[in-house]
Each structure stands twice: as structure tokens, then as C-alpha cells.
Image 1: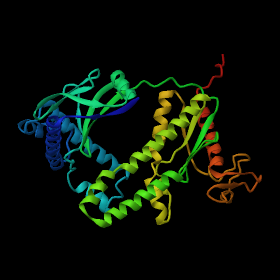
Image 2: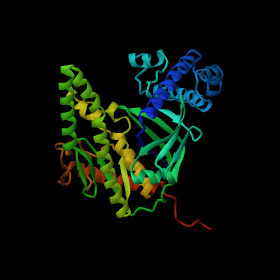
Image 3: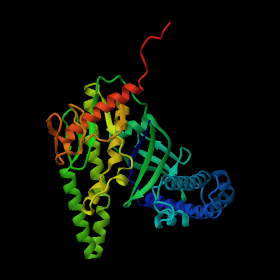
Image 4: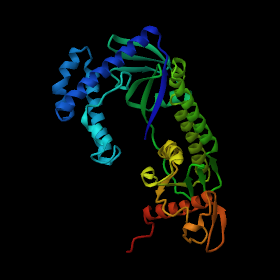
Length: 385
């Protein structure tokens, strides 16, 4: 299982200048390669090297750096093609779709640059790294991270690491191959109903209220509007400083929720049943004031956090169809749109059961998860002689 570990670099003035010039140089070269690739119909990597490798070397890039620049450009076009094919950039003929394919991909001056072990070496005991730059090899660049992240790096780091600069700070994002724990046979499944008023509700009684996160997002939105109206240098600096703060806060909340759910499942030897919410933003129709809450909530991120934490703990995870889980009674199985009295109240028209709507839905998801697991499990019936 691949896990990324992010460490913060703490270079001195000379080291920081060399790293900054390196990122600008490789991304400027990537823009040149992108233009050549666009003119030649985005050829494969080997053919693209024939058109650009010699020029990149003449610009002062090392052999490995030039190879990584070419591969980075080709990977960017592969991602673009996949997004177009999946419909993530709109339907053919729309303005966004045409704009995406009408010009070459452009890389930011401080976009991430991949490094392999020939260009980057780690000294874990000293807490430093040695990095290739356009000004030569820069050694003894300090880095800081948590003890857990350092242990993961020391034991499981494999493959490339990305150098990136965000808000004036340099980071290294390393790829680690962490072994998955052996999955156990679950005794039951914990259903997880995802929502906006309640971020996550489980069939065992845990509920992560979304009120605090929604208040935080509303406060951030109002603050951004207030600062954007002033249009002064100080407000622009403050907006830049606060950029991505809401995203970090939401990611931290999702980590806490995911850890709580996985820990409960591991403690009780249970599996986790999640809703398959892919494409929900395209399916759901909401009024304009509700769209901000829907599109700013990280549906996929919380599910991804639960999945990767469950893999590390050996907890089985299944995805189920969420259809009618909010309209079906978890006691008698009766389905009726009128069963959902309000956002939080469920009243079965058949058997009269009254329950919290999200709790009822999570029980339905748990039952579906057990059915999916049983259907996919190998038969243990002895073979007929």
C-alpha cells in the first residue's frame, strides 16, 4: 500500500535560493517540453525525448532531471486525457472542454518536481537531505517531521520524492510502500452514513456532527468576501496567508473521524460498509445556497482516509449502493419516500418505527455491507465427492 509522507525543509538562505532557482528552471523547461508535445500530438515518452532531451541538457539540466521533466509532462497529458474521457471537464463542445484541449499544459514556477535516489539522498539520523540543484549538489539541508513520519520514511520509503514550494516553504513529499495488515473475518459490519448536517453516522451510535465544520466554512467564506472587497495590499497578503486553511481544517477533521471509525471496527472485529458516492455532485440537484455546502465537503477524502487506515489495520471495507437507504426502514424493510419526515426524523409508514434518519440509513448500509461481503466470500462448503 502506497502512503505519502510530507516533510518540511528548513534550508538556509543560500540553500533556499538554489532550490527556488531549480524549481523555476525545471518548470520553465517543462513548459517548453509541453509546447513541443502539444505541437507533435503528445507523442509517447521515448519519442518525446528525441525532440526535447538535447535541448534540456543544453539548458543546464542534469540527465536525470531532464528525464523527470519529460516524464512529468507526459504524465500531465495522460491525466488530462483521462479527465476528458471521464467527463470531468464537461461535455464535448462546452467552453471548459474546448479550453482544456486548445492549448498546451502550463506548469507553475513552483510546481512539484520529482526526484529519485540519484538526485536526492536522505540522512535520517542527521535529519538532513542532499538535493541536486541547477547550482550543483546542495548538501545538509535540514528537514523536520513527526517521529511517526520519520519511522515510516526510514522503514518504508520507496521510489520518487517530490520537491514542492507552497507559500514560501519547501516540502519533500516521499512515497512509502507500507505493508497491509492481514484482513480478518468480520463478525459484523459497521454501516457509515455520510452527510452534511452530520458528517458521518455509524450503525453503532457514533455521530460526527457537521455543525462546527459548517460554521467554520461559513465564517471563512464571510471573511474572504470582506477581505476581497477592500482590495488593499495588506488584505491581499492576509488572503494569501489564509489560503488553504479551510482545506487543512477539513482534512484534519476527516482524519479524526476516519481514525475513530476504524479504531471502533478494529476493537470489535467488525468490517466497515461505506456508500458508493461517486458522481453524487452530478446527480444531486440543490438550490443555490445549498451548493456551497455540497461542493465544499470532501466526500471522497473521508472515504479514502477510512480505506487506507483500514488497510493498515486489517479491517475489511466494502462499498454498497446507497439507493433507498434513507427511505427504507431498517426494521421491516418497507421503502417509502414519505418515511423520511425531515432531515433528522425517520418514521416508518408500515411498522411505525421512529428513529434518527441518519442512524436508520447507517443500519441499512451495514446490512447491505454484510450481503456484499457474503456474496464475495469464498464458499466453505465441502466439495461433493
